[in-house]
Amino acid sequence: MVKTCPVCTGERVSHERNLNDIELLKCSTCGFVYANLDDNIIKEDNANYGECAEANYETNQRITELIWFENIVKKITKMVGTGKVLDVGCGNGLLLKYFIGHNWQAYGVDLSPWSKKFARMYGYKLYSCELEDSELPSNYFDAVTSTSTLEHIPQPYRHIKEIIRVLKPAGIAYFAGFPNYGSLAVRLGISTFNYNKPPGHVNYFTAKSINWLFSNTDLAKDIKQFHVISYGIPEFHRLAYIIKNFIALKKAKKLPAGSISSTSHPQTKHTLNSLVLKALVSAFVVLYYNIGRPFYLGDKLEVIVIKRS
Image (cartoon, rainbow, N blue to C red; front, top):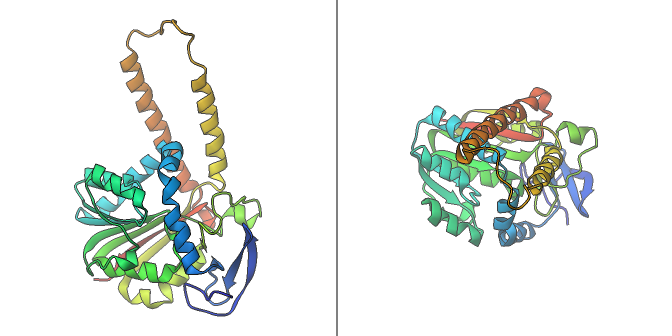
C-alpha cells in the first residue's frame, strides 16, 4: 500500500530511499518526503516512546538545549508580550517552565503518560492526548510552540492547521528542531540519520517543501506572514557525543581520597566556573544557530508564523 502525501494529498509519488528498512516516498507535487507507514503505526510508536523518554532526557539533555529553550522564550516574549502559550509535544515541560518564569499562562499537549508528573511539578495545564483530539477553543492562545515534534506527526498538514486554528489573530506559531532534509550533510550523502529514522521520525521537510505547505494549501488564507530558516551544524550530535564523553572522562579523574582541594573557597570557585560555562555555552548556541543559515544548509529548520488578524 502506498500512502498519499500527508501535505498535499497528492498520489503521484516516487521512491526516495529506504531508512531502517522502511521506504521513504517523495511527492512530485509539493516535494515533501515522508515514510510510507500507516498512521496507526506512527501513533503507536509515538505513544510507546514515553516508556523510555524520561530516562533519555535525564541522560542526554544538554545545557545547550536549556539555553536554547530560554532563548526561544525571550524571542517570543519580545514579539508578543505575555499571555497564554501552548507547547505541543511538551514532554518534560522544560520549555513551559521557562515560559512560566516569564509570566506566561502555560498549557501543554502530550499523550505520553510520563509527561503528567512534569505538569504537576511545574504547574501548567496538560492535555494528555493528541492535539487534534484536545477540543481546544479557537483563537485562544497568544503563542503556540512546537519543538522537535513535527517530524513525528503522521498528518503534518492537519496538525499545523489545528495549531493555526487555536492561535489568536496576530498570534505567533513557532516551529523548530525538526530535521532539514536539505541539509549539507544530506546533500553530500554523509548524513548517518542516526537520530532521524522511521518509525520515530516520519517527516523529512526541506525549506522548499515547508514553504510550499504554508503558501499553497488552505493554511495560506489564515497566515499574515511566515519566515523559514535553517540553522545548526550538520551531524552536530556526533560532535556533542564526543564532547560529552570527553567531559565524562575528565570528571572520572577525581582527586585521590583524602586529598585537599587547592582552593579555600570551593563554593565561589564553583559559581565562577558555572558562570563561565554558561557564557561559553551561550556563545556556542549563538554560533550553532547562525552557522547553518546560508542557503538552507543547516541541520534543522525553524518557522515563525504570524496569524492573520
